[in-house]
Length: 205
Image (cartoon, rainbow, N blue to C red; front, side, top):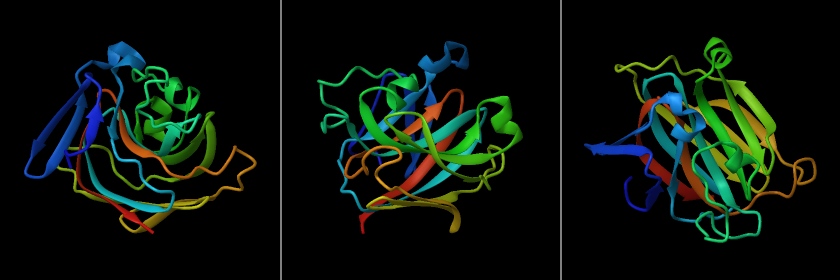
């Protein structure tokens, strides 16, 4: 899972027996500056199935996946013509990139910890386009692995946890901007979450 990944200096990444552990090097007192995104350098086509396993070890925090991400000008998220992104969320949802982002483990704020949901947003903008109940319990060193599966085909997005469908969204290409096509994926974490990942697989469909 380590090949082809790119992260900022604020992320602490370790590997053991095929498992990737992510946490921030900065404490939550740094606010949004403590958060980071681990990008995959590959640009994937529009129609894909994205699968991975996730295990939350320590909270509070939040875990999110960006997908179909690229510059508003059509450039790669790594293109030097785009503004520097340093972890603050507004740089990703209201900056110069377009993307979907699904937050599937939300335990950062008090209201998130009190009522667990998975949210799908579409950017540019902070557009909440789909929402469903989050079945994952609170983080624990003894947490089991959870199977995550996201399907994107043209304007349709479906998200599953352990084969349970969480939400579905059918983009009309009008309400929230053009239908997103190809682009990169990236794993975002909010400090001080510690979480593990394994068996990432992206399949063309």
